[in-house]
Structure formats: structure tokens, C-alpha cells
Length: 223
Ligand code: SF4
Image (cartoon, rainbow, N blue to C red; front, side, top):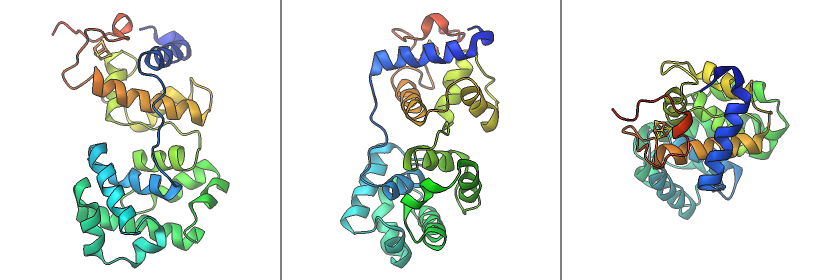
């Protein structure tokens, strides 16, 4: 794929994926705080298991910063057990809730007023929140135009020949933000489509037959 026309290539890839899979309707949640909790729970977990954990949190009335801070660790751990690594995720949810409660009165809506880079730095200072989780919160819970990078993005775009396998988070993020309009709706859909494509075709062992990107891909799919 031609690296010189990155903007055109990225737009073309998006259109192909959208045509194939249609809108993905991310992030499926009833509140901003639910999206924030989901961004933590999805670390090293399949989304189906995150959904189970979220629904248990809902049943236990634990989907707010205040409720999480008041909950006993073992009760919270029991609710989020399906998402795995539940003891460490209890600490992460409490740290995130403490930050939201202390700085913003527990109101996720207040985050919308804060400038993206300031909010990103704040989130990264919270224990257990790394770049991918912070960016997921910024994009999906706060509607900020921040491109989320994950292992799926790295896998697909290195196979397409648009980045190196070892490229760092910032480098990969710039690939998108420097070549696409700063549009939260576009970033939302693009990332969701990348995840869908990585699950349907561009798996660890890729299923290149029928892939809509095959003619522009540099991966040697005969291997
Ligand atoms: S052709 Fe194969 S390696 Fe390339 S994007 Fe498609 S599934 Fe992935």
C-alpha cells in the first residue's frame, strides 16, 4: 500500500470496512460512567464477559462513582468476577471513581468541559489507567476526537504495510490523527470496525480469503 497517500488510503480502508460490516453502534452503554467502567473491565477480557460484569454491577446498583467507592471490595469483586482479574480491577475501578468523585463530584458529564490533552493527562495519572483505557474513555464516554489504538489496530495496519509491528502507541495514533479529520464520530466507527475486522478476518492466523482489504494488503497470505 502506498504510504505517500496515507489520508486517501485510510479513508479507503474505512469505506471498505464500513461497506462490509455496516455501522457498529459503539459504545453500547446507558451512561457515560458505564462506558468508563467498561473501559476498565475490558482490559484483557472478551466483551461478552464485560457485558456480564456490567449487568451484575447494574443489578447491584453499583454503576456510579459514589456507589463504587462505598462498596466493600469483596462485593464489588463478586459483581465484576466474569471480566477476570477482578481483584486488580476492583482497585482500578475504585481509583477511577475516586478521581471522578474528588475532581468532578462523581459527574462524568463535567468531563466534557475539560480540554482533551488536560483530561488525558489526568486520566493517565489515575492508577491502572493506561493509554488505551484513557483514550477509550475520552472517545467513547466523553465524545472527544481521540483515536484509540489497540493490539488489533497494530496487527491490521502492520500487515497492510502502513506501520511497523513494533510501532509505539503514539506513533500509531499519529498515523490516524495526522491523516484523518479530528472527528469523534469517525474515530468511534473506525476503531469499532477495526475490532470487527480483526475478529472476522484479520485474526492472529488471518482468514484472508474474502477479506475486503486483500488487494491492498502486504501480508503474505499464502504462508
Ligand atoms: S488480507 Fe489477510 S492479513 Fe491482510 S488485512 Fe485481510 S485478513 Fe488481514
